[in-house]
Structures are given as structure tokens and as C-alpha cells.
Length: 478
Ligand code: ADP
View 1 (cartoon, helix red, strand yellow):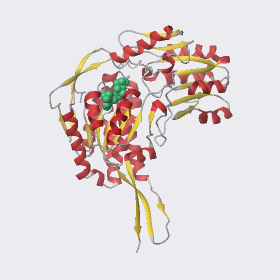
View 2: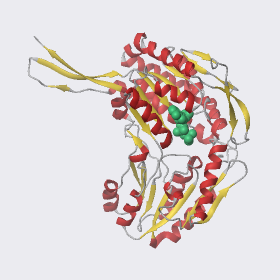
View 3: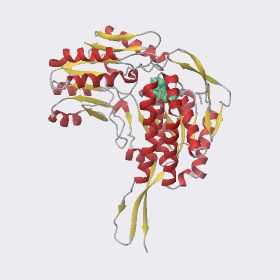
View 4: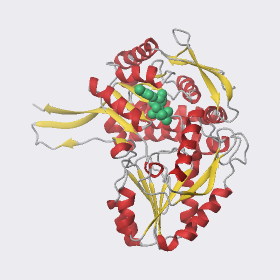
């Protein structure tokens, strides 16, 4: 099997071109050349996908199946993802430049695990019963919410998609997913595997197209019961607006500008290696990144030296070369955006120690010092491999700098002090804190942010809350 050169919708189990036959170009970010076409979904296409999901929910077997049977289908889907891992990995590598090695070793297994986890979570979930004497029997049940609209970004296409789809499907919903226009293929492949695994037609639909066309039509639909969105803060505001009009519950996982805080007593070798991962992984195209690097004055020089050495160790190149650590930026638009921010570093008074633009849309891991904390490049999400290093003198100062942002997604703390490790998280205004580690995940834990980083949480029971309607039942026993 090969990656298709035309990526259609999958609606009610059938592959379909756009009803008006319009297409978008799919550009390979490494070669910067045209590699295929994508259906450009129209309002009509979105309506037909939502209608398919609606009828699969209202009349189909999926929400009515036993939890055990639904879980078995999702485990089968995870098995098929492993069978086709090479193809799924290739799709993301071709679409957005993810190094094939990382896509194969990390992304596909993690994406498959999402289905296993939420299948198991479903079958092991319990709900509350409320003792009310012998006259009544009272309990809560979690009913599937209905049709879920899932709009996903291009930076980790398969992983961020499955994070939503797996939970939504496990809890008995039907789904219309719109992947980003720059990374359409893995979602299309996933829809095929879902059908093969036994997910009934119409339960998992994928529509392709532009955000302003297909995406906004999906969020405006009155037939949708939940909207889950991962993407930029600006688009998140539009999605929230659309959700308000129909009073549809919405979960928004938006941008970030996480702080990596290196205290004076940190293990600097660990801090530098982990910070490099937190800033440069996936060429910085990660909302959870810790790009505002805050370092205690006493260790600043040594830390910067080590971070620069880490940056030099990373190989930027062809996503299909096994030696490549970082692929190109995902699109011309993204490349222009990161270059624009790179130019701001010096305009705003900072100094580039290493890094900068390379050929094509590639970008070398960049470390900048002396950028004022309120400068745009230190405040706005670059979504590229750019670290700005700022000094602080004491812990209060570090906390103040870390919280001086409109975002509130993640923070990373490096310290060997048990007291600092235990007390700092409560002072940091963000959804996730990693202490002496980065990107450690457990699917039971909440993911989500505060402020401009979004609304709501997904993961384990948090996903259940969002993707179901908890229903209280009071039963008179006589
Ligand atoms: P970026 O600007 O980095 O591409 P976006 O937040 O715009 O990030 O994109 C994330 C997802 O949101 C993509 O699938 C995109 O197509 C979609 N999108 C963009 N604009 C809208 C919109 N107005 N309504 C709904 N979805 C949208």
C-alpha cells in the first residue's frame, strides 16, 4: 500500500471527492513541491458528513453496543494501526515533514495506544450511586453526547487527532473530523482502518478542506453536539464564537509559551538536554514547548553553553533520512512566520547565539539571549525551534517571569531541591508542570491550558466528562 496522491473525504464509509470537485494542493515541505491533491470540502460536503454521523448516532448500533464490544473494535483498530505503521508514519512525514524515524517509533505507537487506553478506560469505568435509603435507587450514568466535531492541527497530525477520536468513539459518539489542510493523509488512512476494524460506516467520518470553509461549516452546524479543537488561539476564538451561537460544549486546546525554569541548584546536564527537547522537538512546532527559558544568574553562562551544544548536536534534514532529528517547518507559511520572529530577536534587542534559517523551509535550532521578557518574540508563540533565554535572581522573580504570559499551558522546572519541586507547581499558572522531565504523559492525566491556552481538559475521566452527558437517575423502588 502506498500513500494516496488524492486524499478524499470519508463519509458514511465511502471515499468521496468534494461535491463541487474542487481540490487543494498538498505540498511536501522538504522538497517544497506538489505531491498530490486534497478534496476541498464545501458546506454541502460538511453537511453530508454531519448527516451521516447524525444518523449513525441516532439510529445506528455504535452508541447502543455493549462497552465490551465497542472496546474490542477499538483494540482491533489499534492492531491495524501497528500493521500499517509504516504507511501512517510515511503520511505524516510527507505531509508535514515529521522525521520518519520519530513518526514510526513514537507517533504511531502512541496514537494506537490512545485507542487501547480509551477502550480500557471505558470498560473499567464506574459511576456513582447515591444511598437514599430503601425508597429510591439513585445513580449517574454517562450517556454518549452525540455527534462530535473534531478539528485538528498539522503539527502532530495522527497523534493529536487520535487523542480526540479515541475518547469520543470509546464513549459511543460518532465523529466528523477535519484534519488540517496541510496534513490530510493520516486521518484519511485512519478512517479506512476504522472501517476495517469494524467501526460501522458513518461513525467516523473525515472531511478535508480549509479551516475557513470546511472547519467553520462544521463548527456552525446545529447537528453537532460537541466541538473539540486543537489549534491556534486566534482560530480557537472563532471556534468558541461558533460554539456560543449553538450553545455547543467546546474544548479548546490552543497555543502555549511555556517557561523552562532552571534554578541555581539544577542538574545542568539534565536541564540542558531536556530543555533542548522541550524547545526543539518537532522543530519547535509543539504547543506544549517550553520556549521561554528562565535561568538563574549564577548558572546562566554554563547553561547557555550546554544548551548551544545540544542545539549543535541536532541534525536538521530530510525527514526520510534515518539520521535526521528535525525535519523542515511544515509549510511555507510556517517558515515565513518563524523567519519573521527570528528577525525580531535582534530588532527587539536580543542576540542570536546560534541557529537561524537554513535552505528551503528548514530552520536550525536557535538560542537567543538578552531578549526583553515583554518583547514580542518572548511573548508570542513562535511555533519554531527558538529558545529565548532570560536571567532571574531568585525564585519569586522566576515565578513572576514564568506567569508573565497570556498563555498557560505548560512549565518545566529544573531543581534538585525537594522544597522547590514540591512548592513551585502551585505557583505556576498553567495546566501541566514537569519537574526534571519533559513530555512525560499518562493518558489519565488532564491536558489543557489556562488563559489563551484554552478551555477545558481532555484525558481519562476528563475526556469522559466532555464526551458524555452525565445523567442522574432516581428510581422509586416501590
Ligand atoms: P494554524 O494557523 O497554525 O494553521 P489553525 O488554528 O488555523 O492553526 O488550524 C488548526 C485547525 O483549525 C486546522 O484544521 C484548520 O483548518 C482549522 N481552522 C482554521 N480556521 C478555522 C475556522 N475559522 N473554523 C474552524 N476551523 C478552522
